[in-house]
Image (cartoon, rainbow, N blue to C red; front, top):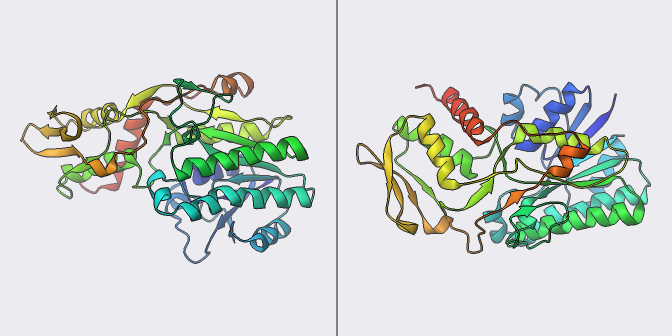
Length: 338
């Protein structure tokens, strides 16, 4: 039986990957900063919280990392630890760099020094491309990070490649474009919209505030993405791969799909930062708030996952319309009035 260690096991990607690996008959070890304060709601939702071995790990602390490596003789290491929200990285840039960036060096150093035959996966974000001048981004695209989160992710990405090249370690990076699901945290836009609209319908919330409606993202389904991560780790030769759906849609389009799915009728009025959606009953339920508009936002970024399709035989099936249905239906289940 193979053993895999997952940092950030209680997050969206970590939870989906844990379930995927358990189905593959892996023994799964999940790490957390605190064994007494781990939030298991995603793991409970997937009915796997009791099937995982939990252990404490602090990526700021070399001794903590050494202890986990010595305690568990695992075959694969999947790293999802660190900040996952761009906005908070500006408020806590030092901690973001330490956890998301330097923490990866500490892991790789342990593998190098102990000459461990462990395969290492690093979750890289499409944020590393930032304001790239080209529309489609692949494994060879230039980097242009625009925030502390992206810069930290880029460092982790580059250092992973560096250790692979110079120390012959099986270390790979999956460059992940936006991937959503019902397991997203409420701080993320897609979850905020889906959950917020259900609350508005039931009189529990008056309106939703959003940022740039014209900003476009390449949205995929998180549950599908974890399969690629695993496939990357089964290759004979370690390589990086872009993981994306491959089409970009605006924030407004995502909202419109949600409105249609919930049969909420109305119209958009106003321009730029004064745009808002008003229902037929003349109620404003969505409006733009300047504080949610990134200072250095980019309007278009699309992932080119041709390499993954060819070498890993992977192709995403869930498009944005199906994704909206999945997220809205799940939010309905959670609300007693539906």
